[in-house]
Image 1 (cartoon, helix red, strand yellow):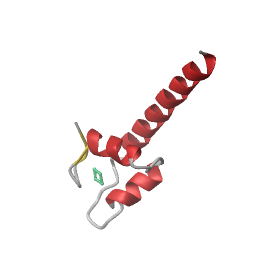
Image 2: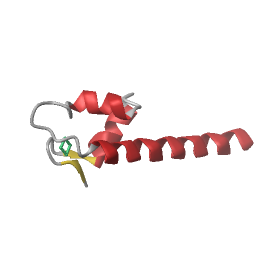
Image 3: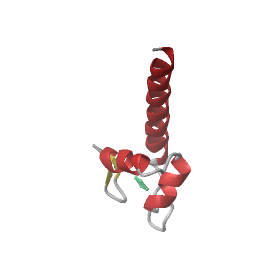
Length: 68
Ligand code: FES
């Protein structure tokens, strides 16, 4: 699914950036140049939601490991 129409970024691209260490919305926006001239910035909210979801899933997985 496309997350950013201006840059043609997909959800997979954003997830891969997370795996490579871009862990905040700000870092991802900078990495992909989503504040460049001609970019609308509308995707920032969707990227932020993806980051929040990924962090929540990671925290849940960590809690399961700690409690086992
Ligand atoms: S949709 Fe991502 S910058 Fe426009």
